[in-house]
Length: 388
Image (cartoon, rainbow, N blue to C red; front, side, top):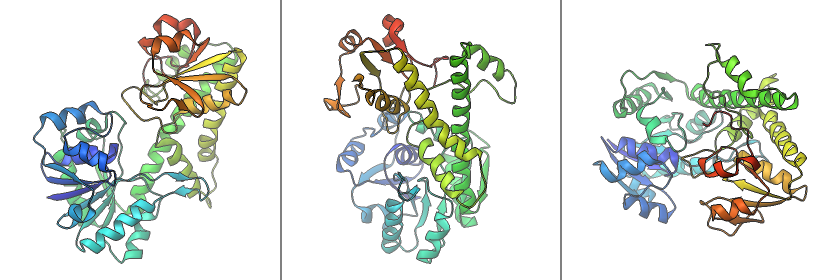
């Protein structure tokens, strides 16, 4: 097959690498620097397995800044561009997806379009009707930043919503590209596939929020949060996975997907979905208040990224804590090697770890690291299990 992939972030690049093992893939992106890097077999995101595959595997993969070159002879176009949440409209900004659909149909009137970007429920059907073009499918992505290619090679499930024949063929393409057999698949309507994505991520956010609120309760009442969580997790219906307290759920997906689902509930009675969204603000308020109680003079922010193995700090929960304590007049410095600027939101960025540790009287870390073992007495974190 000839497959075009629009967008070479985590979703787009992992799919491009995955599929280029068996098909001819041309990636399209408006960022010329990213395109040049990919053509030089350099990863545009932090993902060890992607880097390894680009260097060692025989991939039929190239990149271009020309949409015409990417889609004119392609059988499929996979759209994986960002859809940031717009707080004004209460919906995702889907303009990049809409523009790509319009342009692709104009260039290639027989191309099969598969949306991987996260979109509101009903978007795909609206695009089909707007363009009078049925062959638009939504196939949600379930991957972790830093392990995107691994998750695509070992998918938990493959879901596609759209025309039955196109969905069946695309599911087959993804299944054959995976390294595991008998992957669970669901072929459904576009709107149901869109709902699966939003409800899946909102459930994950709910689980994060639940254990965070358990941890808040334990802190207020001087209880051992770790013991409680371990005891609760012994129920096999609950389990011991995805339970580590944090400063709140963050990253690119969960904050915006929960808000989008809540927006889709505008005419539907609900309590839980609203609570999941609100709980994240409550948790950040609580963590910030606990930090402020310690009366620090200068607080160090250890890493802005959401988790180890990622280079992404968009909407990371520790930024919410940082903004709250700065609002109380507390000086903040940031240790984040991924930032090239000298300041971050008007706080000094320090790239020397030892200087960072010695110049702060309190360090807050969403996730602990061996880097901090020598200063643990002045580290505030709710990382109880040493994982993400």
